[in-house]
Amino acid sequence: MKKTFLRLLSGFLCSFLFASAFAGPPEKPRDERLRAGEVWTDGGYLKKGVWGEMEGVVEAPPEVVWRLFIQANDWNGYHLPEMIDCRAVDEAILAQAKDTKKVDVFYKAMGDRTVDPVADRAKGSTWRNYTFQFFNLPWPVSDRWYIIENFADETNSAEGVYKTRWESRAGNIRSLTGELHLQPFEGDKSRTLLRYRVDTDPGASIPKFLLKWGVKKSLPAAMRVIRRESIRLKNKS
Image (cartoon, rainbow, N blue to C red; front, side):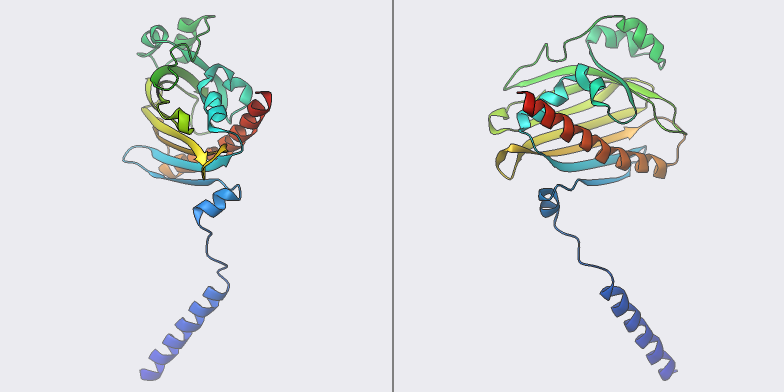
C-alpha cells in the first residue's frame, strides 16, 4: 500500500511539473495589455439574460470618441455588426411605438422625419435623448429592435471624462441596459480609455451560452469599428 501511494504521488508530481513547464507565461496585467492595443472582454449570465463588458484604448481624444457616440444618425454608415438601421427619435415617436413589438409600427410612426440627436445637448452638464436600433441577428435569434433612452453626462468634460447610460423603452426585447465611460488613457488626452457594459435579455428561448457567446463575439468587432471611425473623425477635425 505504501509503495502504491508513493507511485501515485510521484506520478501526480511529474504530471504537475510537466503541465507547469508547458503552460506558458502568466497572463500580462490588463493595463499592459491595453497599452499594447489589446481589447479586454468578459461576459456572464444574469438571472434572465446575459452581460458583457469591454475595455480598450482608442487612438483619438475622448471628445472625438464621444461625438462619434452621440451622433446616432451617422451610425448606419459605420457598418456595425448585424446593424440594419439606427437613428435618433423623440418622445412623440417613442409614445407611438412603445406598446408594440412590430418594427413596422415604428417605421409608420417615424415616417420620413429626421430627429437631431443632439438637439437637447447641454455641454458641461447632463442631458438625454432617444435612439432606435434594429439588428439582424444570427439564427436562432430573430431580428431585434428597440428604442433606448440615453442619459448623457458631460459634467467632467473639461477633464476629458464623458459618461452615458441607457435603458430600453420599447421594442421586441425584454430588457436592455448599459453604460459607457470615456476618459484619457493614463492621463494622455490624445488617447481614450473606453469602458463599456451591456446587460440584455432579448426575450427568446435561446440557450444562455449562445447569448453569452454572441455578446462576447460582438464586442471586439464593435471596438474595431469605434477605433476606425474615431480616427477618421479625428482626421476630419
